Image (cartoon, rainbow, N blue to C red; front, top):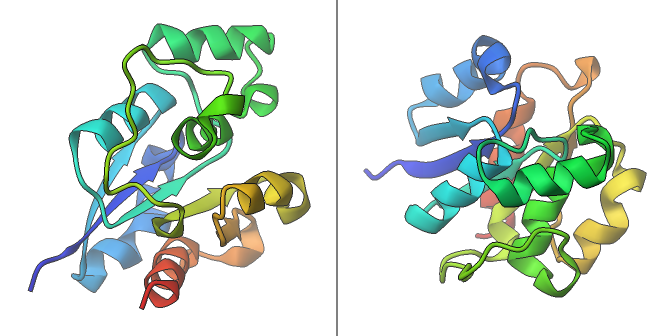
Length: 162
């Protein structure tokens, strides 16, 4: 059986490996790849095919100048820059995205129903933009969510796409 390919774009993924990833990896149904910043996130989306993409709203820029420029416009504050949201806008609402990547074309497999957001922001803080992009899967990273929050979000996306 082929594993479900999951990309997790999360700047703190390394510190969350044991807590959040153990259930996903131990489940055996998933091939999980994580990247730590917006540059690596968009690069992986362009170069690979995933069944599910989970993204944080507050990301580090990484090495790409376009992402670095965007965060600098916001005083270097990743909370204000919201590079994860900018990455989603680049994919689904490029006409309002602050980031421009020369020659960027959205890959054929990218569609909003396979994307989920896992972030510290409340639903109210991101709901309008996610709704406009037709991204319906969201979980908040809070202690009460527990260690199963990543696999719960992955399974929510799978169930919504059945």
